[in-house]
Amino acid sequence: MSAISAPSSSPAPRTAAASRNRLRGPERVVVAQHRWALWIMGVLPVLATVSLVGAWLWTEHVLDAFAATGCSVTHTTPGCDATVNAYLDRQMWLREVLDRAGLLMMVLPALIGIFVAGPVIARELESGTYRLAWTQSVTPARWLAAKLAVPTVVTLASVSVLSAACTWAQGRADRAYQGQEWHERTAYGSMGTVPVGYALCMLAIGALAGLLLRRTLTAMVVTVIGYGTLVAAFNSVRNSLWPTLTDTFRQGGHYRFPDGAINVGTGWLTDSGRRLPHSACLEWAPDFKQCLTEKNIALRYFDYHPASHFWPLQLVETGILLALAALAVALAFRVLRRHHG
Image 1: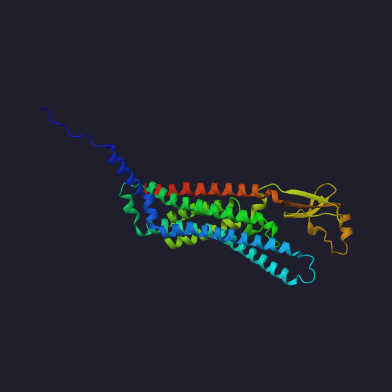
Image 2: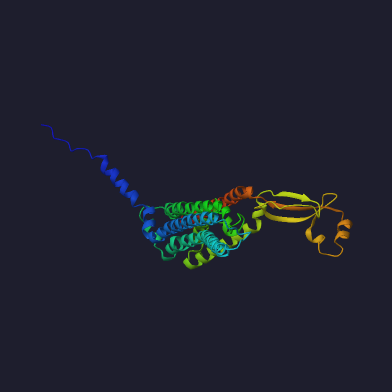
């Protein structure tokens, strides 16, 4: 009688084992190591979003209630003083909420970069604990990819939610008496795609700093300096990222600067079309008219960005930030290969 052959092993256990291995991969290790920091990164923007939406919904109720009183901010009538003052106090409160949300959005990229530069990357390299992962069939490149992937997912989700809430609130703030202009620093930096671009860029720069310096505190400090430099650089060149519009008019003629626009530059135009700075002839100078004649000045000009340039400026700036982030990631992997093969 022929012997009964043992049944072949089922692929199911291997599949289950593979699943467990995936769950225990480097990404899971990153989550386990930094679960509280990642939790805060995810929850803090959500709480800020809920607070911002709640504040604006309450403000809309205040706006509707004030409109029903028949009082006016610009033309106060007897008996409306207390109502107008209370209304303006609430509008100032909304302005403070929007300012704080904008400041939080501007601080977040620095915090994300510090987190990745210090606790995620540099601390492991400084303490030597990275060797444990690399001896468990995890390559250096796989280790770094996990260190970048987990914070990136949390960053994209949390910053996108808060940015969308800020964009929504700022877009509806036109009804508010103390609303912000789109080009104000805390408003522009909290809306659209720019916050996500800064967050991802600083995440990548933080990783590069951690790999290069291999010292936790030093990497964190350098990341903060890098963020300050990045913000200052964009603040100085932002208006040149997209072509401006130009309005010209005769001195003394009627001209109204477009609502919601940001003034980029102003000056004089000669008969030949040559531009002169505004200081070439000053309106309050005694010889102002003589100056215009002597310099053949024909027109005054304004260069400006209208409100419609918000998205072009945002998208160009975001594209540059993402390109810088990609460059920093590529350099980080190159540094890793150079030092660890």
